[in-house]
Length: 348
Length: 165
Image (tube, rainbow over all chains, first blue to last red):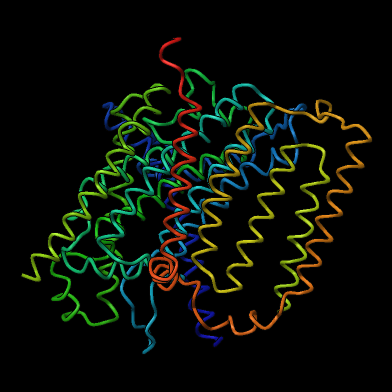
């Protein structure tokens, strides 16, 4: 392994890590600003211009608060819960291509940490692992409300994973590959997958809300019934870790949706820009486009939070099992028929 | 090769911890760790698809259900049923018999088949799919029918009888 390769990957990992943290921190600020905007209020405006230093103030506050570990709690698992939630949420971005290959000092650098040929399945696995943080933390708290929240989280994640997996299968039938790099490259220009898989995208979007435990599916922490759900007993930075993990998950889901369905770094007219700016500067515009899409998705998450009321638990299960899964299966069948039909048509 | 020994050592340690911990929830968590080391084994063998599927299905789904049931029952160390001495002796003998059978079958196993496995790329998803849908089509379809039958059976068992309700 050559030195340049190591430097390149380390730099990419560090940039991605810092970027994820920054976006997660500023999502907390943006969420409050969006909420204020939707409710015709001002929102945080004391710390710095437009309240931009608010995440730093919040972070500092969380570090200095007293940490309480309940006496009846299982100490090791109580600490392991939030740590695991935070750790797992970081893993997802490793396989995401954030742009085309970029040329720096005559070296072609891919803007992706690693391209494994089962990238989609990797993301899927990491997402399914996220529920352990909630379950372990909720159980270790030794509190009935926490346990209820943990159990709700687990059953919700398992239920919606199925519909999510089925919607991805229909996408794979279109793309014929599991590698994120190839999927992103296939959507060159405006050939975005959402145009070929509108129903699949809708199902994936709903499942993404459920997997990240966001409103209207935030039943694991439903404060009107369960106080705080799985995080009831948590204080100081452990509570902050759970909150951070939720925002990072939201970021990762937005990234995945942007790459799988909305073309990632591709935009109409990119060929002309590539020619005009050359291989060093034009990929950066692609990265900018990608982040514009990601931020649009994050805004959508927040918009929904302040628009749609929370589901009841039986409604959540009914939606998952009786609506989304049959719809996803129908989507697979329709996709298969259309693909075979086109093949036959082309042979004639 | 040294990586293999480290991971194999971890697998055995975690597997032993599954058996020796008193708390059932800890036991399940060690089992998850054991499955994670299996995933690493698959990656070392260049079987990426198998690794990821093991990761998703065993760690992400089955063990979540295990944990789910254990948390609902809320078992503690004191509620663990104590087996009688007779059962322990019988269990030890049965386990010993299994060990003898395994060692016996390992002894006759030829080691020639494992050497040429490195660069075939059979574990990559593309090759695996082709092999599954051509050479092993019948066993593949049979096992899927088996899974479907199990699923229908589970739904039937779980469904309430409409007449009595």
